[in-house]
Amino acid sequence: MINKTSLILIMGILSFFGFKSSRTETVTYEEQIEVFKTLGYEFAGGVTKEMILTDGYGEAMWDQIRKERLQQIEEKPFSRLYFYYGWSSPKIPSLNFSDKCIWFDLEFIDSPDQYIHFMERMGTITEGEIEYTEISIVVDDENYEWIHFKVNGISKKWKLQKVGFIADSFFKRFSYLTDELNTKGKYTYYDEGGQQFVIDYATESEQKEFNEKTGLNREWLDEGNHFTEPK
Image 1 (cartoon, helix red, strand yellow):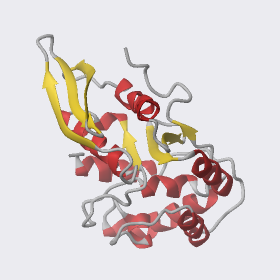
Image 2 (spheres, rainbow, N blue to C red):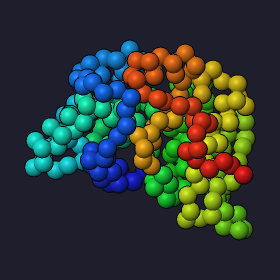
Image 3 (cartoon, rainbow, N blue to C red):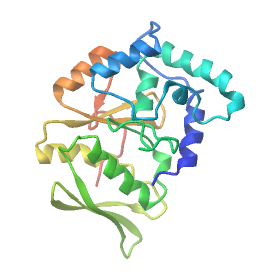
Image 4 (tube, one colour):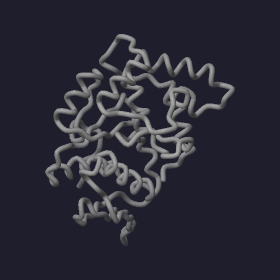
């Protein structure tokens, strides 16, 4: 599983980063929530506005950080709040803030469990269209890791990197699976200029509606040069 302590620390650090957005006007937190609801995004039970505005900090800092986070969410509308839909916290029963998308950081890939956890989540966000099962990590004689799995019942294995190194091409591979499986949806990608990113899943019409309503420039996962091309 993802290191939960690292998640909390990163969530706090992210609050002070600068981010990009195509919008310039202020949009209230509540207005953004309503727009996301029209797009099918709902927070899991236990995720509250108070948690979003204070999670990752001790109670002594809540007054300060609550004000700062709310300002950042409203001055950079939809961009910052979108990340929260993909985040996780041990404070909520389901762990994940929602099952719509995944917030991730390449630095979290530091053990086989993180590859497995991420692949399981990549199935969850498709709402049943893609299912990953029988996932395991195998190390070969040259110390390379391989991830073995079944996707919609089809057996596959992907070569990763040597033990202790991050295989960022792992993320790019998912964009090819949707073509192979001829799915209705495809994986999407969004970042704000740093190494943290959000991966989502959408049809062509859903992608268009999302970008129109939020003003964000969410791409398809295979667009851009965000990850290394698999060999």
